[in-house]
Image (cartoon, rainbow, N blue to C red; front, top):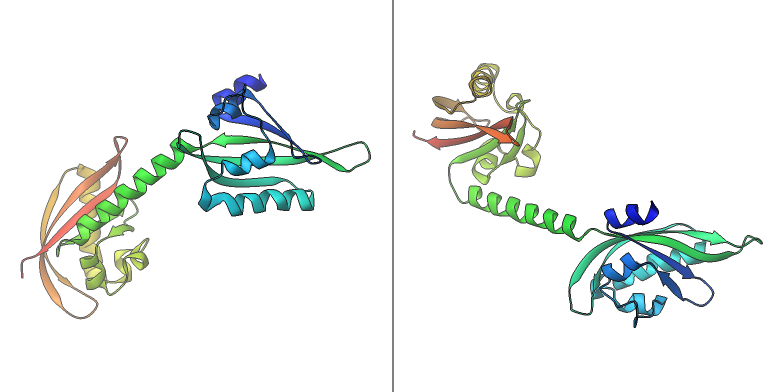
Length: 239
């Protein structure tokens, strides 16, 4: 059952001898490091050689701290395999003591999280690209959730509301506009949610700095996994 669990979870198992630095790896760990178990000798020194240069110092520090303080070990780092493939892994271990109570071994696991990290990077890059695109327009662009909170805004929206894009996250119309304007915005948003159809509105909007603009605003229902999660608004100044 342990073999099935570790293989299904992309998990390798290791056993470090604290006396001589030798290590025992299971088959899955050799696969994660892309090393041949017939020729590769797992040692603390060889493990260190496989570490990505930017992660080498913190990973070694975390491991040495666990050894010196005889405490559990947890860290995340990248490794470079012999074919120069870079993999992201998490490592965790626990101290094992002999019958006199002295720390003798550090036994742990390595979890291959490369796919997760790559997916996170792709999502982050996509978000950055999307933000760059909406920031390139002078039109007001924003995303609200089903609770009418701003999730994303572009530079034009931030400028008009007198806040940074980061400060606008999780704010609501009530934070910026008078009650009568909020009532109208809320009704328009709710109509998008109720009908799940695109709504086009022309409205005179008074901003916190006292200026007034006539906006042509189109609001689109926003879906995720076929579920309505909010709306996208694009407002063009037609004053």
